[in-house]
Every structure is written in structure tokens, then in C-alpha cells.
Image 1: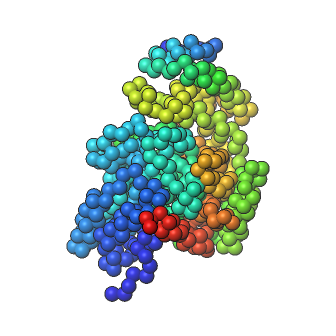
Image 2: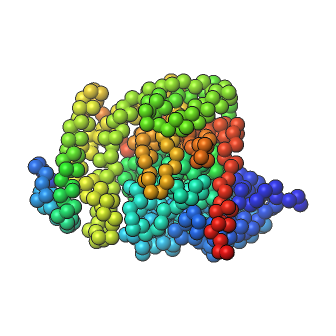
Image 3: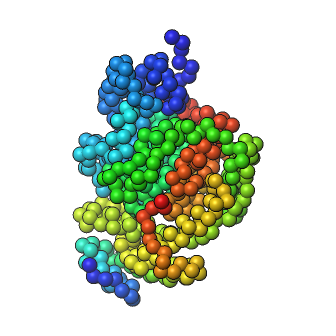
Length: 66
Length: 471
């Protein structure tokens, strides 16, 4: 799979999805550009919440709440 | 032998089980009545995708024979139960409610279906789900969305709408739904039935079409809390074929129902009740329900739950896991997907890995913070949804606003009917508990239901049936 990297454009998305074996249309790719950009912005927000909650590296991902 | 006191379709599981065990009604009689009712009513409400009429009658006959010969297996023996059509039943189509899977026939039962069959339940068929349990209805629909039995021009929500509708319309006595962000509790709220999303890992999801594996749950739906507890008793427990399944012991849920709620600490989630967008009628009904619990001795208090606004950041987890789950089908049946759902799955495939992992870390923090709240309360309560059912053409509205928190946390949460709006639409109250403590959730919901009669109301479908009938 080809890694997806900034900037998010129709072409970078096309290459990324092609590497997954998918061929979205131009219209789909154009609609996805702002949506995928928003996902990257959201990643920054989650970082900020973790920092605010002092969730350091000792917080481990677990599968269930048991 | 004295007469059976009410119409067969109105019997709860607990009532029917008592009559079956005493051989006052037979599983065949009960199943035939519900199948015949389904054939009359389902064209109006559209709960079913596939009705197992002959198979169900054969299973009922087998149950009857076993019971006659002394082989009574317990409260689900001979009880008709429907399955959301994401759940495998061996040899029968599992469509996922989608145009993408018109031809998938599993060669085995889901783990929970094995348990239902072992308990002697009669599987009546597969009921409606929005496509793959994800998103809102997107025309052209392969299976038209169910109509709300309380107002046929209104939505039953989703995604386990077929389960809720089949119960409210008295087509079955119990059902199994699934819930990734609220899909059991939402249609339960809209249709005036009980829906329980248990703790993550409590019921095996082996043989259930996945959407987002770290969020997917399956759970019982019924008209009463007692019935939901009877189903949960049978389907809960470890299954080695499901890596998310837990070995935590399964208590006696029905026994927990008889406990007093006096002194039990009930926390109402302040942010949800004071949400500026909540329908005032919904708020008033939930406040009335809290007064009922107070009258039973519960200690009701308002509490703040941390990180509620951060729940929304979880949507990339759902879409990224959904994208990964669907990638093989997207590769081979790309054009078969509805466009909006396909675009959401494509978006999910582009979620940054670091974002996915950071949110999973945030979930751990959210679990810890909410467990802190459970140091001060025994259950958390909110409206299940901020609104009553919309008309079909209005769309679903903000349906996951209060439900997705407990999907993200993996804590048990149940919707119990708590009244009707002035226009006759049911409203649900959400009751959530600590991980693995379904017993307390069921206890509180059952105590409320024993003090109220909402669950005894039935939608006026016979009027609709008469209008639909040819002149």
C-alpha cells in the first residue's frame, strides 16, 4: 500500500486508493479531498485532548473495558 | 384447563414460557399465530427481509415434541425470536440489508444463534437493518425502511429497526439486534421497546457481519426488561471463536430483577438533560421517569461525565474500521455500494494511523474518567435520544448524540420506554452501568417498568390493516 501523505489532493488520493485496489471516480476523489483533510486536522485535536488530560505514554490501548 | 388470558401475540416471553412449560399453549400454536400475524401485518410495517415461515413451524414442532416428552429446556424453549439480518443463520441468506450481498448464504450459525437454538428458541427469520448497519437510508433502497408501528409515516430509526418493529408490532416475542453507535437503543426508543447493548465482549459476535470491530456489540431486544434478561442469559458468555469475547462470568440476570432499588445511586447526565437541542417533551418524560425511580427509593442526583464532547472525535475509528472491514467487498463490488456509504468507507481508509491510535488511547482515558463517575453512582441515566421519531422524509435527526458514548466506552446501556409524546410517539430512557454490570442496569429498568404501564400499550395496527385492506 502506498502511504498517503500531505498535501491531500485528487492525485495523491487517486494513487493511494489505487494501491488498495480501488478506483474512485474523479467526482468522488474531489469530494473526498476536504473530508480527508479534515481527518488530518482532527488528529491534531485528539493530540491536544490527550495532552490536556495528561495521558502520557503509559496509557495503553486495550480491547475491552474489563 | 383454563383459557389463556390474552392474545398470543401480546404474551411476553416470560408469560409465554410459563404457559408453554405448563402445556397450556404449544410452541406450534404460538409460532403459527405470530407467523400468520406477520403475513398480515408485515406488508404494513416492513420489519422482515426474510421470513422463515416453514422452518419456524418445523422448529416449533420439534420444540413441542421435546416438551411433551419431558425435555423442557427453559424460558426460551418454543419462543419465536427474530434476528437482525447481519447475523448468520446456517443455510439462509444474510443480506446485511445491502444490495452488495444478495447472494451470501452462511454455512454456519452465529455463535449466539447456536445458543438460541440450544435453548430451544424458534428462529422466525431475518429482520431489517440499514445497509451493513451503517449510515442513513440511501435510495434506491434494496429493502424499504420499516415503518414505525406507532405512526406508519415515521421512521423506526436504525440500524436494528426490523428488530424493534417486529417487537412493537407483535410479530415476535424477542429479537437480537446489533449496536455500534446506538443501533439497538435508537430503534428501541422510537418503537417503545426494550433494547440492551451489553458490555463489549459479553455476547459473541462470531458469525455477525462486522462494521467496526472495536465498537460492534450484539444484544437482546424485547418488550419487557424481564424478557431481555431471559434472552441475555442464554446468549451471553465466552466464545473462543470471537477474539473479543470475554471469560467474565455470567450472573443470574433474572434473579437480579427482584432486588430493591432503594438507596441505589442514580446519576442523571447533566449535559444530556440540559442539552439545548433536546425536545422539551422528551426531557419532561425522562424527568417524570426519574421521579418514579425516586418514589421507589432511588437516590437520584445530577452528575457531570467528563470528555463528553470528545466522543465525536471517535467517528474516524468507526469509519476506518468500517473501511478495513469492507475493503475486500469494495475491491470486487465497488459499484454495488450506495454512493454516500461508499464515500464514508473510502474516507475511513484514509484515516491517519496516528489519529486512529491516538483516539484509541483517548478511549482508555474516557473509560477511566467514566469509571471515576461510577464511584459515586450505580447507574447513569439520560434520554436515549433528544427527539421522537421523525417523518421518513425528514431524515433520522441527531440519533446517536446520547447513545454513542456507551458504544465508545463499551459499557452496558439499555433503552426502556418511559412514556409517549402528545402525538403518541414512544420515548426511551437510557440506563447505563459499569462494565459487566448488566444486572444492575436490568434491575433499575425492571423496577421502573413494574411501576409503569408504557410497555403494555400496543400500536393501533389493526386500524392501519383495515385501511390497507382491499375494498
